[in-house]
Image (cartoon, rainbow, N blue to C red; front, top):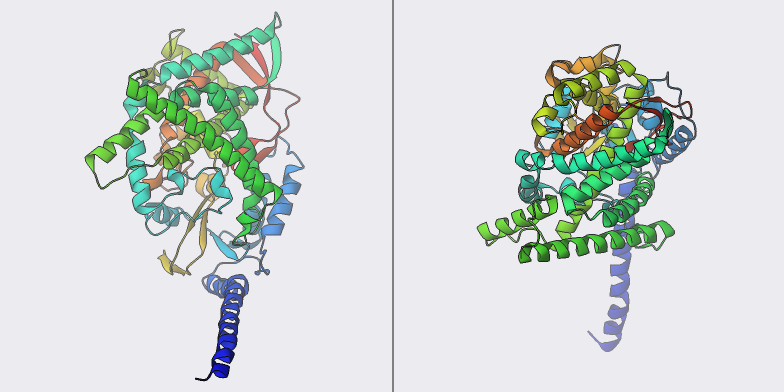
Length: 521
């Protein structure tokens, strides 16, 4: 090859390479936003599913965002017991128009609604096949610990974290929980100042109470840091909701938009606070200054034991411990405070159940200190909590994904499809619960969950199967301690200033608080 030809080759060859790479890149984009969605839609419709036709890039995302804005701009009347049109307006609309075998589009991704308890049981049982989808990189800033892991990493973290939630550990937490609840009740009592009745919004008190309890039981009374972390995570939750309602374009997290910058700033601040708590706790345990019997201490000891027992196992890194702590804080506090808010709301409008629960608490404890064994005997209160979790579950929908063509029941679903398990839609389904599905009737749980559901997987507020929420017993214990404390000191009814506005922002919460009229007993 002479010099002229070599020079021409050196010029032309890179151009050909760039052209081929550009064509491949364009093909991948076109396949992602158009060809593949149309193939998936054809496959789903052939198997009896229905939904809106795919719309380029956005799918149903814009409709969903508009419906949520509209729903959250208008409260609902107390007589409207079906809260689904306000909580999940798009999903409710799709099922009303297309039936239970339906799908929605979040960008170019098809999400199939699974409403059959048998199929849900199969999905939640086979967590090695039906996996949690890889989170939107911007959504991972909120929580990305155990709940976001899969396979061996999930198994390792679950094993390390499990000891923190053993029954004997939870028993030891009743005293701290009770002390915090009594302090909150004292604040309420101080507000009376000689009056017979007061009006308060209980939601911020319950939020702060859950913050204090999670700080005490998880991190050893670092309450001020806990408040800072939870306030930051509250802002992060709203930003995350906005992120999840939009289509994520690969690489978008690197674009320095105002929202992206704020998400990263919050994450940095939360991680710095948690790193400081963890480092101080490790030093205190090493020096023997603390017992290390709170959740963080138990986690650190369990992690150390795991490393000692298996030299090839590096355990959890400090960054992974931080991620687990973020999950402790947000999930433990957010879910429990909202569950308490909805329970007080429902007991305020169902006074007969409030009276029955109070009578039971006095019968079991009188005016004696609360204890674990007695809390387990509160059958009426347990029935009430189960019914609240049915009507107002903290998490309203679960998401799973398949990475290859997968058989489910009589269907074969194409790779890449998301499977939506809409907890709250099943909890309100009249075919599963009867004509009174929208009504508050704790007696339906008088003989346990299995009897109430006719042994179907129609009730799973804390998920089900291998990935059942690891902190569900902790949350239920905290709720029982709190309610038992309140019921012994106050009676309450709904205030005329209350606005009924359930809203789904990562968890199901009262948009404008819970205003109650309290009477001191």
